[in-house]
Image (tube, rainbow, N blue to C red; front, top):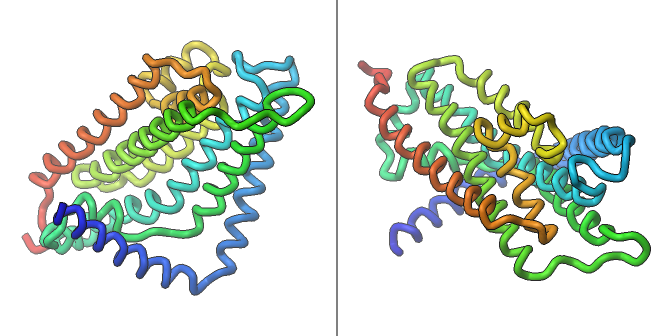
Length: 270
């Protein structure tokens, strides 16, 4: 418990300092909001084109597909808030030798590298995604507005959303940690981010070959489609369990890889 409290105090100190520095430029928030709304409008337009052939897309209704898009927008906002400002610096730490100082700190190095800073400019994306999800849930039917989901599906979807965040973090961290062996891995993280854009739409809307790819190779399905199914009350126990298991394995894998990678790190002073 004391260890948890120590890390919590460290996180508050890290993020408090970061927010104080970032909020000196409030105009960035409006720029980010306009960017998020523009991207969201573009995604909705593309989704509307995909629905041009009928009332459903891969077995998903219009409102259900909007829930998937909203979840993707939330994850993208989380990436901007936490993943990008932290994990993008690992490569720089390795190249400049400042990783030496990180490894010598009296705190877990993976925690420090993953949570040292935070950017508030991803919050507009998170709020826009949550707003789109709420609007889609309230307009699921025709005629009168629909009611919000029951507590059970909401709690399950929240658990699966946390699992999605863990999977996303683990994938990013693993790629960033590979910089100890391969210096130029930042391009790989950008490729990963643009590949995960496929999560904007339900996985069942893609051809069979891509469905397999986005489920068993790149876990795009576990990031957005599976949590959306749970929120809409059509979740599967098998897929939910698979999502939680995948999150646990990904997190454990990132942890083991980082410990292994440290053995091969050559100090800047050596």
